[in-house]
Figure (tube, rainbow, N blue to C red):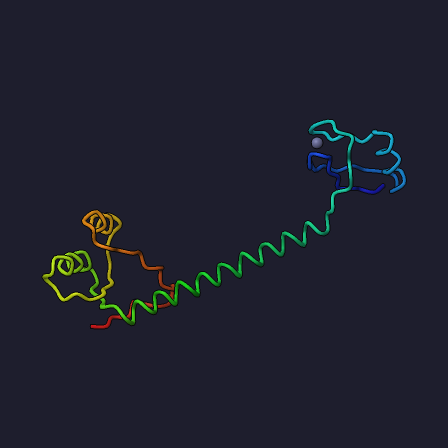
Length: 143
Ligand SMILES: [Zn+2]
């Protein structure tokens, strides 16, 4: 007996057991092999091996994309850490002070809760979330 992975015209996948590959073709030719989902007898062998290769390729691509995005996030973060003043938890106050002209106008970064960031945005202050640092690196304090 041979087990075949099969697919109907609607791409329903199912399995069938046949005594031989000739037996399979003869049964299909006589419309004896039915899709259990829709009853279609337009049945073909599903391309099992290529499907496995495709799945592996897709996960490899996803892993590469995740790595590339992590690298990009690290670059963005490194750039901000180099060029912006770190103000820590004072970020919301400092951002407001800069916005109202009470503090020197300069790019800053620091810590803000989701609500604080939203409040700043509502006040017309441009705030952008910084990609998370890699778990191994602590924020570099510039002051
Ligand atoms: Zn079907």
